Image 1 (cartoon, rainbow, N blue to C red):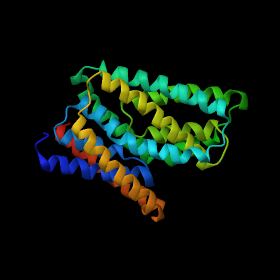
Image 2: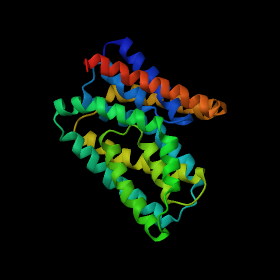
Image 3: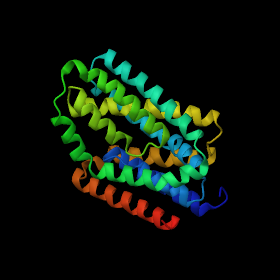
Image 4: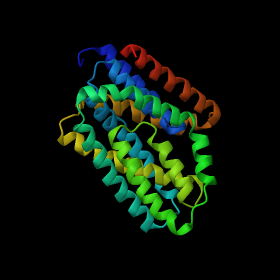
Length: 255
């Protein structure tokens, strides 16, 4: 596959689109991961390589957003610890999932991620309406982030939606502060997952380098230019692409 320049170009292009989507409205993994599968990368290697390929752009976003965070340092530290533990567990589980089983799970995971992204506005609104005593909120945030981090380490698509819903429910502060915590926690969960994948020898380094270049270019493009785009329009574009990629993969598998 490495010698197929067409596939490498498609992966680079998908990474540009994915990085742009993440900067504008999220959901980039719903483009990059299926593209790797279409290019013939083995499912588990594709998932691990995808995590590494998009990580540099996500890490840059997390570093920028850190200035927006108003939540106490103690709570943020606990959330980052939960992200590390969850991300490690999810990545470990992925490496110990038989290849044929993970292949069967992919359509379900893609459907779940695409559906979650589609309903993300309602999920967040529902979370914000739930009345939970303040004393329980911090604990719920930490425990919930461990679960979300495990999902992120195992698959990752739409992890940001889950975190936004969780933090909207449990943390006070502006949407910018919540976005900052989401970016840091997501970057942390993916960082430990990447380390597990590296030691587990599941990374296609050449493809990951192509992805990283594309994702950074797309993230920069989104941050500098495309944030001016109507967010509703940007979200609709993401949804069309995400559902199109999911449907194409399911049809390819003959399901």
